[in-house]
Image (cartoon, rainbow, N blue to C red; front, side):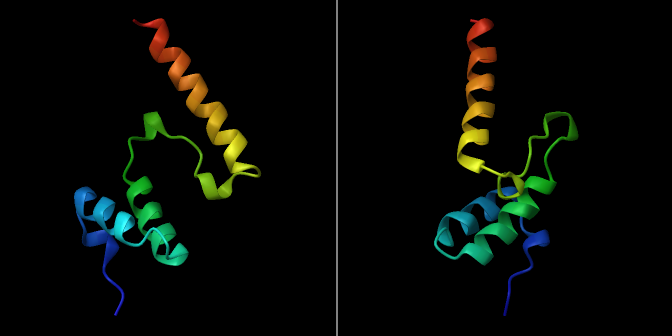
Length: 72
């Protein structure tokens, strides 16, 4: 029986993701629910939808890091 991911709290989802990190289907399903709850003002692309996730996510993180350093 599959768990009802949409009824889980964010904390429960994060725990589920951690426990199922080697189960691609379960991991992606839970991550998708968690990401759907994000504030629309802070949306970033869903990593699995990117053409080259490693490079594109790294670029996003570098940009965020550079923005954070400007405010120090």
